[in-house]
Length: 248
Length: 254
Image (tube, rainbow over all chains, first blue to last red; front, top):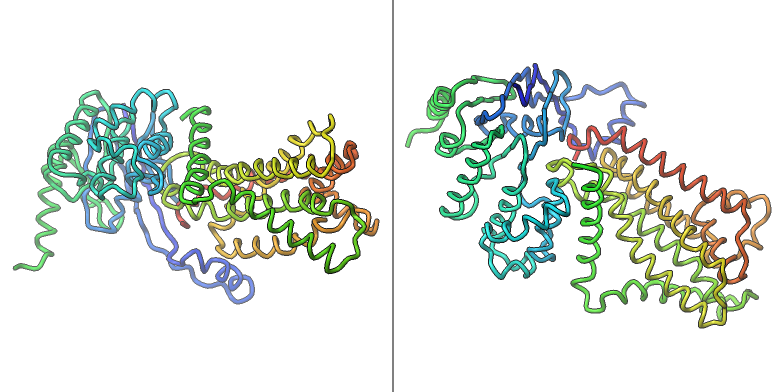
């Protein structure tokens, strides 16, 4: 059964910054209509993710990976095409949403967990596990501004790892913490995967994708360049990236 | 996410706002009291010692009845307006009902509002006004003002995403309203031709009703209460409608 189904999804953004928007609207009224500059973030993208499948998203910066994940998460809507998602989506597009430096680690955990969709009861049940997983120890009752950047990321990731979604979307956030913590996170994601969750993650790290995903989608300038079994797509992508990179 | 989870998010965002504002201030909660007290002192000084043309007894309590609802209105509306833009990363990256953001901003301000109402009532009692059964109407009246500000904030915060100019419009509107709400003058001096203008302005209506109850010890006129309820609830409904229409493309414009 398809958990995520995208059919011919296209999305364009206006290049005009919104802070000039009033000016451009007024100009449109009083002067002749200006030509809107737009660019395609996604063009004609189709994707089907079945239960228990995990997909890797690859492509250069600005290829449309984050936009694609945002569309699947329902954060933004396509101009053309259709998007269908079954079940609860957890979108880890950014770590530590809602974190505030003046609140303690514990307070931030609660705010962040509720934003990610955990109920009061679930937060209470998972709280100790989250703190334990993050390894920040007695710092949990200190303001977040006293944390090192790595500790903040670890705490954020620990919360994210305790959301129980049907579809997990991860955007470039896997490269956090030290090696031991990364290994712990990968193990946790693999556990979710084994329990039959679908997953889509974008990453520039081929090794991480090899461990997590079987299939991959390669995007460039909003178009699907290739999609299929991970190894095939990854090899083709890396070959093309190497061809562009200057030789040392 | 279920309905109760949304309430939990709202609760957490309000609490976050409140904690952040007070944790770093050595005087903490007293800042909520200091601002209206200073305003009260200045306005009382000007209108009783400098201009000397008022025959209103206990002018300081009278003026505080205007300052407290107006302060909440101005601060709540302003912080509500910039809240969606100010929480851009949240709105772009996390899926939760966006309405929660401006509502949380307004509700966080209503905590200060409650503290200031406490100050107002304490000063009223100290000046010799006796609590009456009508005081039970005060939560309803102030609650309607919160409803009204929520409605305005929903509208203006959604527009602010598309037109950043909206926040400056709100600032100017607040300056104008300071004069159009009977803060330092009474309803009695307003020519009858303008009465409706005041009664249909919920902030003015709250000030008038508050004075009826606290200073005059009587119930506010039913017509005033109806107008206050009507405009406040209509503003909230309109706010939700506008927000609903505009929120689809928030992520594209932030």
